[in-house]
Length: 170
Image 1: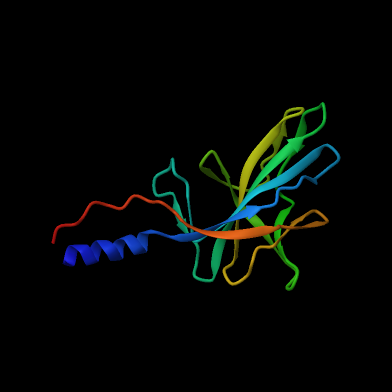
Image 2: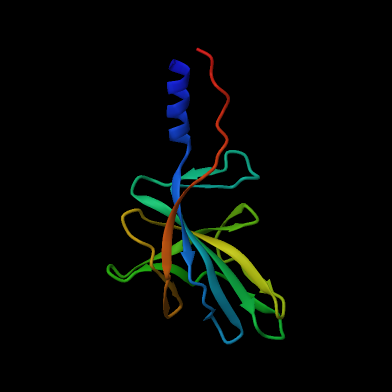
């Protein structure tokens, strides 16, 4: 009985609840040669960097992680240089901008520190931006340079699947 209760409590603690948001995808202009669309928005209390050891990060009690998956499209016939320095989550009520602290690419978590990408002609780049955002607020707007884009969303609840350790013998 003790083992069952212990495993049940451990399971509840290890499974973190997060929400996945379906987004009405629409192309937006970043520049005359670069468009982008938002594919998915997620809110989590943990993020992981799966290939690296100890790569699980927990948000503090007042915040959450907001992950926005973007598809960047080079519409020109020339290679274009691009970075995510001007992408912010925006709260119009407080006029506060939240910068993307990290970026997920192929399950690797990178610090968003002005990395420039070169997008080949007529091709695209898919990245997930990771923002730290107040838990009590709803991430509804993305600010890019002087554009404010509403993230049209419909939230569905989901659970992150994680491996539960083997039972511990008492």
